[in-house]
Length: 124
Image (cartoon, rainbow, N blue to C red; front, side, top):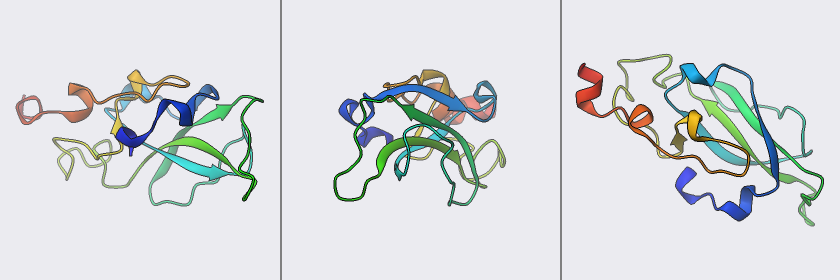
């Protein structure tokens, strides 16, 4: 979850790659995945779609036990607000969601009124 990400887990990020125009999205979900490389587009094995991912610098080291790198990925599920505006997240947002406009390499991002969409904002 985004609130559980620590700065030391993402400090080797050099940039974020967006596969969609995130200015149109109120929120994206973020998680740390174990991936085989530092930079390329990661495979995606969840429902929904991959929206973006982090690329790591050469100083990032792989896990001794698995040989994988922990990289941040950004994604959305089929029932998220961008697809179902009046659905489960018409107000509020998932725990791992952040406003994509607050994200940058090495920065956890944060929830905002835009991502949380309080009930009164949704009614307007």
